[in-house]
Amino acid sequence: MTQPPKTPLLDKVAYPADLRKLEDRDLPQLAREVRDEMIDAVSRTGGHLGAGLGVVELTIAIHSVFNTPEDRLIFDVGHQCYPHKILTGRRDRIRTLRQEGGLSGFTRRAESEYDPFGAAHSSTSISAGLGMAVASELDKTDRRVIAVIGDGAMSAGMAYEALNNAGALDARLIVILNDNDMSIAPPTGAMSAYLARLASGRTYMGFRDFGKKLTAYLGKNVDRAITRAVEHARGYVTGGTMFEEMGFYHIGPIDGHSFEHLLPVLRNVRDHAEGPVLIHVVTQKGKGYAPAEAAADKYHGVNKFDVITGTQAKVKPNAPSYTSVFAETLVQEAELDDKIVGITAAMPNGTGLDKLASVFPSRCFDVGIAEQHAVTFAAGLAAEGFKPFAALYSTFLQRAYDQVVHDVAIQGLPVRFPIDRAGFVGADGPTHAGSFDTTFLATLPGFVVMAAADEAELKHMVRTAAAYDAGPISFRYPRGEGVGVEMPVRGEILQIGKGRVVKEGSKVALLSFGTRLADCLFAAEDLDAAGLSTTVADARFAKPLDHELIRQLARHHEILITVEEGAVGGFGSQVMQFLAMDGLLDNGLKIRSLVMPDVWMEQAKPEVMNAHAGLDRAGIVSTVFKALGRGLAVGVAG
Ligand SMILES: Cc1ncc(C[n+]2csc(CCOP(=O)(O)OP(=O)(O)O)c2C)c(N)n1
Ligand SMILES: CC(=O)[C@@H](O)[C@H](O)COP(=O)(O)O
Ligand SMILES: [Mg+2]
Image (cartoon, rainbow, N blue to C red; front, top):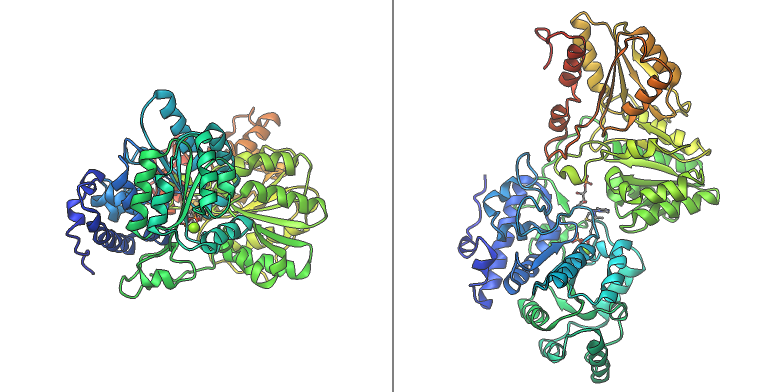
């Protein structure tokens, strides 16, 4: 095992107050030590590496110039906050990042007063920062608010809604645009091209030029207009940028790895800016760690790795991942149907749509971090007879709910929604858990809502969705690998609203929606062994429900348990509503609905989270026994 790096300067810096005692000339060494510390920690835990490596100098410079936590520092997404955590009293726990019981991989209000705003979903920092800046004005405090947002996060509409509002309010807000010309994948879109032009069209402003520009008054709007005119005339500003037109005082580009650039700019802004300022900082994702710098993804998210070689630990999978099965099946179907197109919101690799893009580049669209747009863009394509697959993670689909309702569902447009990362996702914790999709989709009239029980079922569902033109249709599947079932050469078209009985019994009925089916089958073994003959059914559809199947299960079993890896209000609630309205609850049927508990479950391995939630084999068995008023039989899992 490698030894932790030697960090003599960092050993003296537990909090930003210690950092502020250092001389400016010490900061490059501190940056080296923070980098080493971070690389060592992430090599042991896995996690988001490239983004944090890129903001080491920026993070140090901000904490050294501003009076955090009194001044508020907000990181957009929060995946780049590991250096910040190291410098804000959490170094002693940095090797617990993303582990059960450990530090979160994102900023969290509950974790530290240095995290004034929690994040993990992108593009919220300017809005939150503006709220804090306005609060500070209303409270008449002298607080500065700094929002650090990446170029990828800057592709989302929400960032522009906030800029628009901030420019009009003329609030004292400092936005630092951390431009590393990367999202998770290479960034897309006209705004990305615009930033690239801003960054490359003019060389870094020299130290002296900054002096000239920044000694100019950075006051309120009316004064800035005059200053700007003067600067244009002097040539210190090389064109009215979009940010300036929106009312921001725009500085940059500056070298985000140079303290000589960062410190004077931040000090001037701290001391003189009264209205909104945008500082365009250019950085390199993965900076300072050769394997990350050389990697195409700049080591955005990594497994545990060997620090010397950069080689990441590979766990040999027993079965293909759900994502890869989805992606390969979509390509297979797209080869046969040229109306099929794919849409991803900045997650080409995560959703597997990079496979479609490599085969059909003109039929796959990466729209940037723009889930709302992705859904309505898909609706437009569907309105013109195309078959759009808007592939989103469950958690990010939340952002586009009104688009799903208003633009897709009400108009009955056949947009296909492959929903990846449905259920517990593990280390990313509660912000990324795919908990609510079944609840919020199955409540919409006319929606078809499916969940794959295994990877072969997923293949059927991709084909079913491709063939279904009558309205919107979704299918959910989890992060990680499948169960290793035999795969058909081509998926079948499933009958809409029809489930299947997987195992016949007579006393207990387990009705599963999604990949909990495997645990239901294991639980059935235990129950059979305990003398409780158990039926296991795979519902496939939460909407429309298979009424015939549910009636049959309810009438011929003493107890019916629904099982799903989702929040309350989803499949189980749909079943319950049907049973109640159909009068099937009137004759003493025992029914229980197993769902995620009504709490924000902390990060842990998905199997551990499922066990805590009572959604695993033991949890199912124990629910049956409790419902029947029996203790756990000896030898039964639990
Ligand atoms: C709403 C939302 N969609 C997608 C993501 C997934 N995501 C996390 S980081 C990231 C890229 C962010 O790029 P950028 O802001 O430039 O930060 P960098 O990683 O380059 O530092 C994406 C797409 C997310 N966190 N939130
Ligand atoms: C920060 C963020 O939102 C992504 O990087 C996310 O962590 C990716 O998750 P997966 O590893 O499941 O693709
Ligand atoms: Mg970026």
